[in-house]
Every structure is written in structure tokens, then in C-alpha cells.
Amino acid sequence: MGEIASRSQIGFSLFRRAVITIPLVLLLGIASGRLAGSGYDNNWFAVLRKPEAMPPGAVFGLAWTLLYILQGLALAIVLNARGNRLRALAITLFVVQLALNLAWSPLFFAMHQVMAAFWLIAGIFVAALATTVVFGQIRSLAGWLMVPYLAWLCFAAALNHDIARMNPDAERLVPGASSTQIDG
Image (cartoon, rainbow, N blue to C red; front, top):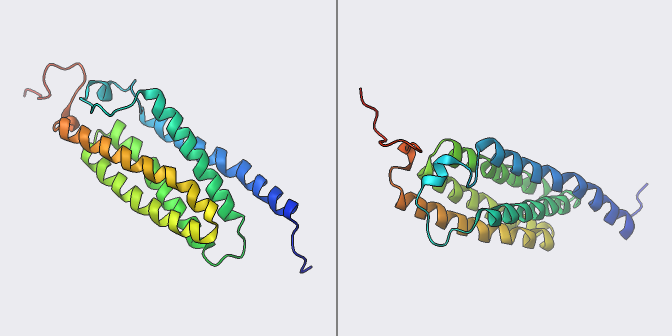
């Protein structure tokens, strides 16, 4: 009973976990964006002034797909580290940062809360940084897989902040309306 698993058994165990975690994280991310109406097709977003650094919509789709895949793989690596004393903390931190991440699109695109979304990104970054540090203590590869996500969060926060600065009345903006004021 007390036998040590072979390298191939460990590798297959990681593969089984990754087959679950990667699609799960990716599908949750896609669902959050789709349900919130995120992207350039959103009428409210289309009328906002945007910073020059704003990439085309396709870049966001590709970037988030890659970032969710990397996060799912990092999670699989941590899940595969059975017996590690930090594993439960790492999983909890990951779930918290992912839940915050999934809340951003509805807050920004559906509820039009631009500044609240900026502060949420700041919270996501803190939670993702904590996750990255703990993941790295468990398996360095898992930590490194989270680094592109941290970099993208910084870029996304800068874009979000610039949009808030350039559109101070974004929360009240009604696409296609001649005025954002309702006459009584």
C-alpha cells in the first residue's frame, strides 16, 4: 500500500486533472463574458471613448483564452500536488481570484460600473498575486504559469482606468440617446 507512484502515473494523473480544469476555467471565463455582453459588440461599450493603447477585440479573445488555459493548467498542477500543506490554501485563493475575475465583465459591461470595475481589477490582482505566490511555493511551474495573467491584469487595469478617466459619465451613458438626462 505505501508504494510511491511512478513518473508516468503522476503524469497521467496531472493529465486527467488538466482535462477537467482547463476546459472548466475556460468555459467559466467565456460564459461570464458572453452573459455580460462583453466586447466591442456591446452598444454601451462601442460609444465609449477608448485609449490609444486599446487593442482590437480579437486580441482580447485570444489573450483571455490563453490566460484561462494557463490558469487551468496551473490549477491542475497544484491539484496534483497531493499532500502539500499549502494545497488547500492555494485552491481557496484560486477560487477567490477566479470568482472575482468572473464578476468583472458583468460589473463593467452589463452594469456599466467603470470605476467599480477598476477597483475590482485591483482586488483581482491582489488575489491573483497571492495565488501566484502560493502556487509557486507548491510547484514553481504553477506559479510561473500565472505570471502572464498578472501582467495582463496590470494592462487591463490601465485600460479600465483610462476609460473611466475619458468617460466620467459612463455609468449614465445611454447608447443612441441624444441626452443622458431623463425629462420629468
